[in-house]
Length: 284
Image (cartoon, rainbow, N blue to C red; front, side, top):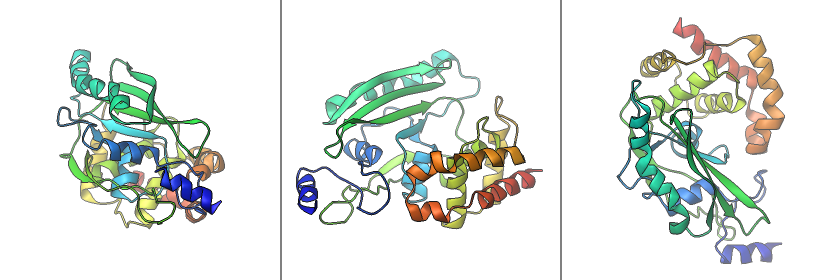
């Protein structure tokens, strides 16, 4: 097995460290970003990383796997469909040519708009030497709302390790993204008001508080969160016991597969829910 792993490394196929408890597939999104760090915008658009991609790969250190890349383009509340179509045009060109510029990628689902051009989705495929199937990389670009803090450029991270040497395989590089405060405000907004509650939101919040010492009561965060909850179409704040029950039912099916065993064992859904409920109470 060791010799087979060495041959994989010699062929350049990156893998996670053995024993991490995660299915041994490449860090697909990190690989895509590393191979095209500036091509993802090239200065021609204002798309930036957001959501769990922004938190996991930039602000909080890489702690949870995902199969997608979340971007947003700042959009005025009164923007028209034509405004959004013009804003996405440079991105459409970039996504359409990714498979030409990055070896090993294939286009599974071309980029297309949904919900009156407020969301665009595409799916790329990456065939790893470690698996006999094509693994997906989902790309989502939202054009729904403005950003409330100036975007920043920050270093992206990856857990991709060299099979033989054991050190990081990919160089880090800066990407455009939401600030930590706004990314966390987005995560809290989702935890508080998402129609279908998602355990990943609560894990990300708990990790930020427990490991990174993030202050969910900070004045800037509360200001941004209030503004996001006031956006038309946002669901009502919900921290009911029924919501907690729904979260408990998601633990094994939706959270365990994307975490290392130790990280899963350290997570306490009741503690995470108390954090979010405390934020709701602080909002008044």
